[in-house]
Structure formats: C-alpha cells, structure tokens
Length: 386
Picture: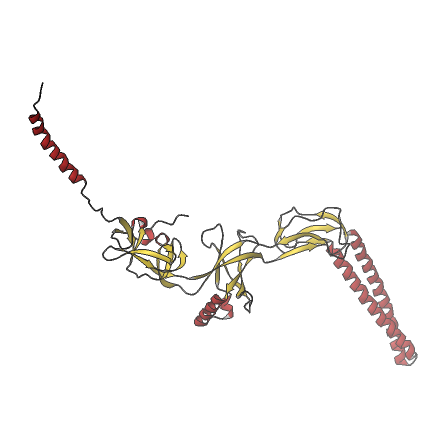
C-alpha cells in the first residue's frame, strides 16, 4: 500500500507540535517546599548547678602487717585476698619461746614479792624498836633501804612480766581493722623479724567506707567561699555538703557521700585546694585507686532553661543552636552552655523562653532559609548518640 508524501506530512505536523508542547511542560522549574523540621521551646525548670571535678578513691585505712618479734612462721590462718574482721588471727610466729619468757618473768615477780614482804616485816620491826629506844638509827635506815629496794625490784619484775607478755602477744598477728588482706609475702617455716628492718608479712586495706580525694581550683574556691558567706554556713555545715561520685564507666553519679576534709591553704604551685569526701561504699563498688568523676552542688536549685543536647552544635565561634523565627526562617543563635541534666543541657545565655529551637531535621535547615516547623516537647527529643 502506498502513501502519498503530502498525507504523511499532514499527520506528522500535529504529532510534532504535541511533543514540543510536552517537552516544554517537563522543563518548567518548580521550587521545592521548605524542609520539615521539629522545633521545641526550651524547658524551664529549677536545676542545681555543680562543680565537676576529677578525683581518686583512697582507702580510709591501709597498713602493712609486720613481724614485731623474731621467730619462725608457725601458721598462716587466712587465704590470700580474704575479707576479715578486726581481731581475726592471720599469722602465728613461733610462740613457745615467748611463753617461756612470760613464765620466767612471772616467777621472778613472785620472788620479788616474797623478798619485799620479808623486807617490809624487817622494816616494821626496826621502826618499832627505834620507837622504844632499843635499836639504833643505823639498823632502821638499813631496813628502810632494804624495803625500798625490794619495792623497786618488784616494780622491775612487774615491768619485765608486762614486756614478756607484750612480746608473746606479738606472736599472734591479727587484723587491726576490717578489710581485705593481700597475698602473703612469707611462707610457713620462714624465719622473720630477725633483722633491723621489720619483715612485712602482708598488707590489709579497708574499703568500707572509702575516701575520694580531689583538688578544687582557686576560682572555684572563691565562688564556694562567696556562696558559704551568702548562706551563712558554719564549719559544721560544711561537713554536711553532699558529694556525688561516678565511675568512668557509669552514667551519672550514683555514689553519694559528704565532704570530709578541706585543706586550710591553697597550693601556690598548682593554684588548687585539696579536699576529700567520705562515702559509705556498702556495696564495695569503689576500690582504692580508681579515677572517678566528682560533683558538688554550687548552691540551692535555681530556675534555668534547658534544651536537648541533640539541638546543640558547635563551630569555631563556640556552641550554637538553630532557631525558627516567627516567619519560620532559620537563625543561628550563639549560646553559653552549662551542665548536663540527663539528656538536656543548661543554656546560661543566648536563648529566651519562647524561642523555637530546632531539635530534629537540623541537616536540612540552612540559616536564612525558610522551614516548615512541627512543634513537640523538648523533653521528647531523641537522646544524642553515644
């Protein structure tokens, strides 16, 4: 079947016109809608501000157990690492020679008592005879001297008995306080205490309660003293100041205690003041030697504005948040941040209570450009990724 050229041209012209028209519609630019973001007003609530410091845990009591008498180790009455009570027997050092010395000293004391009794009787007789005029003063003086010498000998014998008993007691090495005993440094049958330097048998460490030591900067010391003066606190009140402690692996500050000591002077070389807290540590979660996070309240709770941590960004100029204006235009607002409270952070300066802070969709928001804000509670904002 043959088509005439003029027929083909008459059909192709409308089709070409239609295609050109369609292409023109496809290339027309349509501006995208403003990106959707989530905004929230800062949370206004009373919060306690804290001094946050790094500290170390330390044992309240720690002691080396040493041999105070010479002899062979006869018994070791504990297992390495045992937790023991005060007075628990730990080591026995060959007690028999010292028991004999106690008996010897007691025998000498008994003999001294008998000698004194005889001297006392002789003195009393001479005193009676001198009073009657039938004895000489020389005999009286000799009896008096013998009586006094007997008293001195008895006193010395009594002291020797006490010393012998003390040395005998030293053969029993007991725990001086509740705590953990370290691995023994001697063996059964080993001779100890025979040199000028005492032999260390083991060590014992008390961990309940426990100390936390830390240094406070001079600037913080000035602020603390000003707060103390403002509140009219006394020295006894300072011992009641709460101290909260957290391990590096823990969230928050779960361990509670009170201020126990503060140095009377500031260290000139470091510009810090040494302080110490004491914690009950009944669960024994803290061991001596840990690095810990410490915080101390700076005063009574005060009203503050808080925003979710996810809303805070930072650049070379410092921390900032993005805020949606009344016209839904994004503004970058420089802020001064404070302490963290759960998943929120205190904003000390830079925000007003009615500001709409972007808490979600921050990557789509550009300062100076419009957004489509959706409001939610700041407390419902997602926690920052860890």
